[in-house]
Image (cartoon, rainbow, N blue to C red; front, side, top):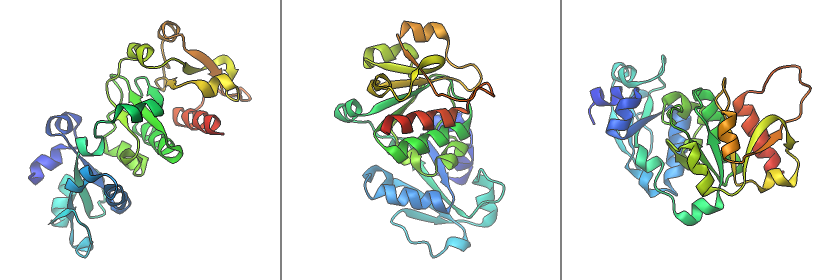
Length: 244
């Protein structure tokens, strides 16, 4: 792929059209190389390096470019000088149905903040055994800001895009959600859910949709001095409590 096309990958429409995204920075490229040891599809990734990384060792195909060229394709103001071009299908290959059945689903309804999604993916990767479902209108998980915030978790958490919330009823038998008036997270009922719904940072999830899904409400207990928790924090607390 030429550099002009790679530069376009900063925009979602071109990531969708071309089927590629960028993994930028030394830490993320190292995580990519580690993931490729167990996920053969990732071995097709290509590296773009400046002279600063001329001695970088990798089985990926390597392209040496100038700092000026790196700046033109980088999403950061001060590029480190190392970047990988990766197929989106390689990062998120189709899952086997048996694997999907063993995973607990975290459904995110119209989430907008890239940092929140990256943090959530990082939490799910830490605990393992989770699948992330994104509703239509959610932030693109292959947005460079999401990838950076995920710290490599993007390679380890199965993600489904544009999942209608109405479809959850046919896939999951016990759906849970967060509400100010709900049961305790420490309850057995909370841990028995196979899908958890979390809403948009500002609007949450329309109550009518939750009612239609017969979602069970649960509450993260607090002092009530502020209106709400950060979405990433709420997911992290919920997943931790489920695993505890």
